[in-house]
Amino acid sequence: MSKAGYINDDSVELGFMNSFKNVVEKLKTLETERKNLLLEIEELKKMADSKTKALESEISMLREEVKSLRILLGAEETEPKFAQKKKK
Image (cartoon, rainbow, N blue to C red):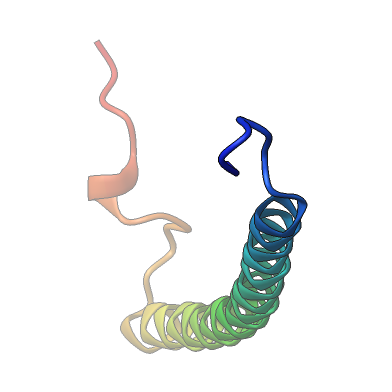
């Protein structure tokens, strides 16, 4: 404030410019963080997809191994005894 009790226009303008600069910097920071998070999400989705495909492949191989072992052992049951429900 000046001696007469009025607010100095220069200090108001300077305060506004500082506030505006802070908002612009905050927006830039948030946009950068958003971009980084979106990239990380895409990478995690790719990793999850890859893991899913690997597990599907492993399960398929295990099923084939079970079929082969059943044939080899002459097992006529389609499910092992431990997987069948008990009758009361």
